[in-house]
Length: 432
Image (cartoon, rainbow, N blue to C red; front, side, top):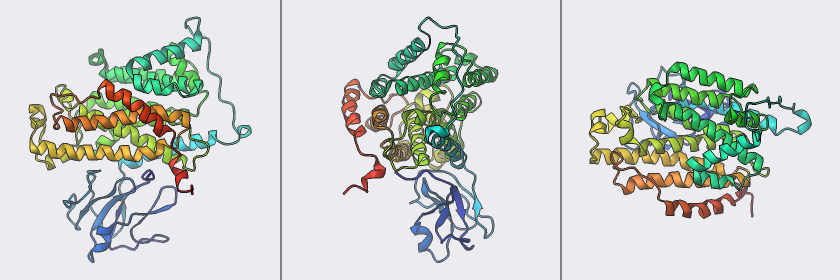
């Protein structure tokens, strides 16, 4: 799997690379170097500026003074643009970089958990005296399992292979995420205000402090005493709900990237501590978290492409405005809902990007504990098939909803199980 991008940097062609860096190299945020091998950069005698990322590769090429220009051969993964500032290299603060800071923090928490047990402090005990049915936490977790089974049956079946403690924890996280999403997408969404989300966030803080409000909160409150789960991704998801209340357009993919992180990438960061990294894995915690983030982004991009028509009827367009304009499309074309050659070409580009994130996630899944891989593989295989169905519908996501039929879902389970048995990717090159 490719390492999670550590920075997005504007390389000044006329300036020297700086101490310890060769031309075409980028210093990672962790101090390590990663060669980009950008052939277009090295092939030109009069070098242009090049916007590069360890995740996306070369994002665009332009001559000095031609900010935002890109060649026809440029990859499609990001719509970030930047202008050169003299001869000095200029760092571009992107959504990708901001999210990476969160990834590093989550990985550090997991590393501390993996230290020898005697070096760890016991987590604070969670309040147990709840106004809950007699079954207490057992019944709370059971109810979370019922909700997961009702709304995510394939994923639920996959969790049955996990240990009881991990399985129940994943159910608790799933239920909290679903309840949060329902605030802005559920039947009462029209009545939700920013103040309601503020109250939900305070309730989250109480939950993490061991003061759960109800039975379902109690399950998550108990879970966080058993795994190194940080509150930040949960708060970020609530920020995503706030975004939905005030924003219905996204200027470019950088803005959309941050939204996708808020509402879906966060789920991956919440889940890794529970899923666990395989003891035999040689992968870094950062790379596994990066893969989990990529899977969340891929899933959300797939949701967006599947629901274009449905979202448009609600006045929302979750597509990069600059890329629509570049394709000769406008909001009016989305609202009309007519499939044209321009639309097909645009959709092919968006689908290619989503698949790139799925591909990035795949290797990271192999690094999880073996018993945790099946539900992730099952979910990923099914979501990837949604993209296939959009293509099968001739890119008509205005009036046709792409979905994976029951037979295909059933067939995906044994395939996912087979993949869950594969050796972690980090160990494969060491096998003779």
